[in-house]
Amino acid sequence: EDSDLVVHVVDASHPGHENQIAAVERILGELGYGAIPRLVAFNKADLADPSNIGGEMLGAQKEYSKNATSALRLGLESAQSTLSSEEGRRVVVLIGDGRDTSDDVNYKDIAAKLEAASIEFYAILASPKSIEASAKGKLDALAKKVGGVINKAEPLNTLPQIAENLVANLNNV
Image (cartoon, helix red, strand yellow):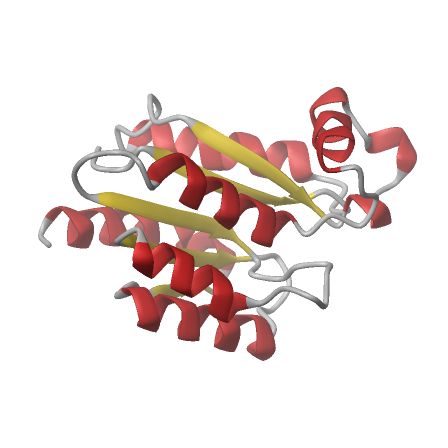
């Protein structure tokens, strides 16, 4: 309820990404956060089966004019630019696997921008596969700089409880 924007990073190459989006939407609704605007960023669209690419994904591709999107970086930068002029507490919550297809992501620059705008960053890393240590390490450093926390939903069925705990903790800050 204190968040102005939810950045949802979707693994576009996963054959069940539509079901994953629906599950996240359902969980957010159950937690009472269905009305918060969302930025859905499709990561790894360059690896997706072309027959699974929908209009929403193509819109993101067209907007950023890239095949190999840097969805995580773009999502965080968009959240920072959207929220930086807003009043009150600003919180970004990322739900995704924490990976980005681009090697040129500079998390220190992103952290500095979030910190300068007093935007908190929290993430729930969730994936049917294991979370890569390098991705978690980069996001841990980002969260530490801006006063946030990274949680891992492993196994994946722990995601609803971890999301509920994160919301409760955010409300107590």
